[in-house]
Length: 199
Length: 199
Image (tube, rainbow over the protein chains, first blue to last red):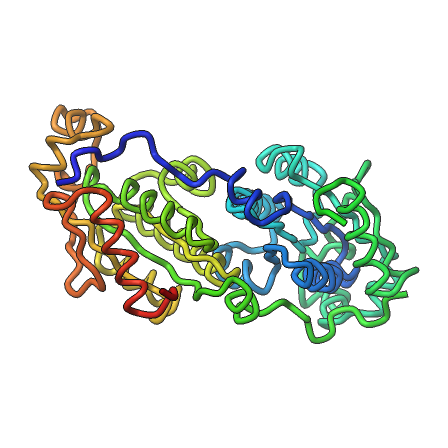
């Protein structure tokens, strides 16, 4: 009989997982307008990190908005809860030893500050994916700006809902000035510089 | 300029992550009464898997109830939402290439069926951690049964809230008959047998 239930839990600690993975676990928090290139840059960055043998995962609209947060809409309140849950999930992935790349508009400074607080300042890297609204609207990869301009989508960031730019992000990526590969390389170089990964 | 925003996303697929990790990703869903030994067995199992070089993570009350689900209580409705969110998070971890071990009472058959549906039948391994209520109440590792008997805690599974035993679980672990080490070994042997991990 197991007579030692709920003793000190021998959970495999994050530090042991990081050690085994040979890299630190962090959250790369990509924020920016729709169409700025968050998902694209996150994907390109993940490819490079995976090639380097790292444990990585992307959280974005495709896998979060359709699953965990499918009960949430786009009001200010729901956006806050959306970011709260994403922060908590990102924190779990960090605890599991992974580098998590989150790609959400996350338009409010306060919500991102809360995310940083939840995840822990030392594990949260804010990456501002910057491109002028006009450029994003021109790209309009999902045709959402068009719908927002026609009033078919309400509370659309940049049109009838605000985007609050990061005041002091860890990194600014200008997708209106550099190619996807250059942008992803900038992220990886930042990680090398900060010794999150080794040369 | 990045003129190729939101093209086909080159997400690093689960299959590539599983291949690199040299094991399949799955959810080991431990269900059972409070004090049955879910967390203890999950922790002991994780230690063995980690030693084998596997990517693993435990989701349990300690890291989920205090974070992602801190807005939820213990009514039937909140328990259902609790399990829904856990299922969605477990699914993300599976997608990231990990073996996830979940340790929650998860008392309702319907909620576990929904979890299986969300995660995908082939990735969901239901492990019934079985011990008689009297044994669990005797152990009472957190002093919760005592409080429930005194009416200080309401909706406590086994006392004034139901526990619906799995009808056809993938594995039954009897913590009232075997030691923790024996129980964890049974889980690992099951994984070997099902070729989730290699000898």
